[in-house]
Every structure is written in C-alpha cells, then in structure tokens.
Length: 309
Image 1 (cartoon, rainbow, N blue to C red):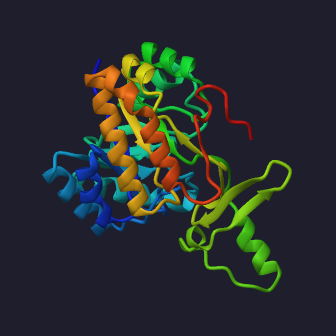
Image 2 (tube, rainbow, N blue to C red; image 1 turned 90 degrees about the vertical axis):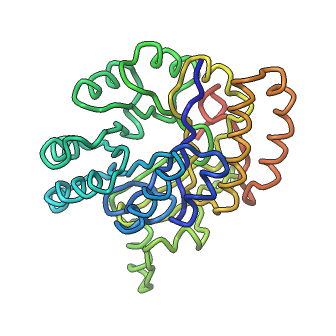
C-alpha cells in the first residue's frame, strides 16, 4: 500500500502555499479559456508563480486544458501547451484529442492526464488513452466503489478520483442564464461573478438547491450535496488509487485549507494506524459538517449508490 497524492484545486495563487502547508501534494490550476470548472482563474503569470512556489515545497502543479475546443481555439493550443511545458507544469489535464495532438507537436515532454468527466468508466478506455500518451486517467464521478477498484486493478496508467467537493450534473456550451437575462433586457456579467451571486436551481419537491454559474465555457449546474469520503478511505488506499482530489469549486480558501488539513491527517492515519483512523472518523465528519456552506449536506456520492439526481 502507498500513500495517494492529495490533489486540491486552489481559488487563487495566494492559496498555493497554505494548501501545501495543510498537506496538499499537488494543485490543479488553469485559465477558464482552456479549462473547465476551475476553482479560480490563473493567468500565465499566476501559473508561473504557482509552479515556483509548489516546486520549492516539493509539490506538483497540474494545468487544466480540458475544455471542449472549437476551431477558433485549436490554433491557440500549441502556444499554450508550449508555455505550460516551459513554465515547468508537471502535467496538463486534457479530454479533447486536439490537446494530445498539439502537445505532441509543441510540448512533447509535457505529461498528460486524461479527463473527460463522464467517459472514464472502464479500464479499456483508460488504457487506450494511456497508449496514446496519457500517464493518468481521471475516473468519472458516477462510478461505485467496486468499479473503481476493478479499473485500478486492470489499469496501465495512474488513476485519479474525486473524494471531496461538488460534482457537475449538467453543462451546456451556451450561456443559458446569461441569454435569458439578455432576453429580459437585463445584463449579466459572466466573468466569475456568478460564483459569488449564489444562483440556484431550486427543486422544491426534494428540497434541493443546485448551484449554477456561468463562465467562458458555458452553463454549469452542480450537485446539491458535496461528496465526502474522509471516513471511507480504506478500500481506496488498499486498492492503490494514485490520486485523491478535493474539488474547490465554489468553496472559500479557508474551507479548502481546513478540509485539506483533515484529509492529510486521515490519509496519514489510514496508512499508519487503521485503529486510530477508525477512532477519528466521527470527529472529522462532525468538523466538516460544521463548516459546510448553508444548504449543502455531505454524502458519499455514487461510491455506494447513495446519490440520486
């Protein structure tokens, strides 16, 4: 058994050092022009600074290049990937084969992590992209525990899963809410401000509120609850999952730092002393519940088929 990487998505470059000090061993950053559902916007200068800070502390930085690309952006990929390689980014996360092709031309030494959000559901697909050049596969959020373990047993690449945070239920390339506002003769600035405005899709029948925000990649509707697997790490660690991800979308820096600190302790104890890990579970859950945003509960997502939406 090995300790998995603890990957966190920071909200700004100022989060990098605090998150590493809290226990993160890798950070996922990016620019919304090229990456989907980022916790924060990172310019090229921010990415350079993030890499410098992380590498000084022995942590890694990955860049999200997992947007759905249309023709007008494809010509930009060579330059952006070449920049990421030159900046010292440890890997680029991609879903579109255009990124793979551009990387071969412009950044042949840049490692690649395959992530399509929904289609990472079997080890054949993981291994296919591994043979094309990906070092890692990011699994879909809708998989149960048995499927994840089975994929890991048969995968030829590293496997990454999300263990904490909200997940995306729906994405449209169109600015659905923005267009509706425009139709009404109103103006809605979609540059990151929806995350602060607190827009929700309200399901009165179930009493759920689904966060919704828009960015350059369109409209995103998120899950009503946050996945929380801090008390269910044993099987995942025994299976040898390579990377545990904490998603910081719509979370404050303070929340992310606190949750990262707890998962660092949980991973270390699960590795070193299962008895002590068992004893601490209830206190971690109570602490996370106490700092959860209003109207957002925690559950185990699809790991045990709890989530229904």
